[in-house]
Image (tube, rainbow, N blue to C red; front, side, top):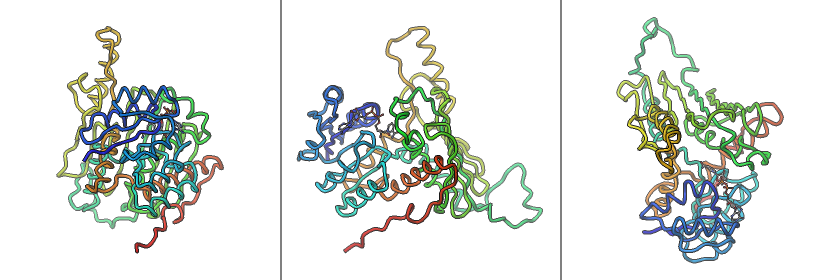
Length: 389
Ligand SMILES: NC(=O)c1ccc[n+]([C@@H]2O[C@H](COP(=O)([O-])OP(=O)(O)OC[C@H]3O[C@@H](n4cnc5c(N)ncnc54)[C@H](O)[C@@H]3O)[C@@H](O)[C@H]2O)c1
């Protein structure tokens, strides 16, 4: 079945990710491009082949030819669109962050519970092929620890495992370049710590089996900070952000260690591990764009493609330079959600998951402002669902 889609908010992310995904898919049809800026709405519709464009999102809700909304505005527009859409029976893929406040999250949660119509939040990192492999390896590490070897192993000297050896240690690094952001991120008092780090909070929660009990953030909420999430079993996730890095260097590095296994996911192009004897040391993933620039794979391929990109610019071999980008899961996340609304699979990022992430992000903001750790309780990580009739 073809899924007819309306994209509301045709700015940078929509034009860079979701509109190309829809245009390239045989099963997705771009019905409407909506933006309050009429030029953007019209240009996006023409560029990506939409059937029509409009400037008022209410027109989308009122129409009868839309099967799914992709909401790509900032958080200036979330519950106002999502709740009436769900009441009309239209599923919504909304960009992150899912809302600006706990109140708005509850409105969306209630509309989702009452209608049973799905919402997917754009925590797309979890759907990237590289993260899927990273998570699979952690699952293998959790199954048994009897097969672990390493060059140095003094277990034969006899020792009980100490409780800390059952914890999960996570380190997520975001090498960000302030120049890659539009100015609104710095006007917004919530800054990058809220708008961007929801991705990494989502990852940290997915890698842990225990629930979070405390968060602590230090630095500036606009960028350059470190966040720590403590879990009930003593596990720690450290999320480190720099805004004074360079865009051409790999942005995201995820590391998890558990049960004498070390696993790394480098820039969505390479996953490495040591400790799982039956698994490969390294698995590589294709670049999203710019793959034609290099014959190398994985992280070496990423660096080589960036080098070649600059060489092409210097030598003026072409006027249209292929950008180097990686598969961060935007395509897979949207495609899986489209399959989900047709009953083919689970929702890749349901409201119940996203609410926990977004509430923790709000508590991080509170922590950085007061300069102290903030408690996380069941009211943050647990939602009371209505009983099924
Ligand atoms: N998932 C990711 O990896 C990722 C990456 C970048 C941005 N984002 C998210 O995507 C969202 C948009 O970011 P962006 O960089 O594209 O911003 P942008 O400013 O380029 O685009 C936002 C668009 O929404 C339009 N808009 C605002 N209010 C509207 C309204 N009431 N009705 C119709 N259109 C309206 C604006 O005119 C603008 O064109 C943000 O929430 C951001 O956090 C996600």
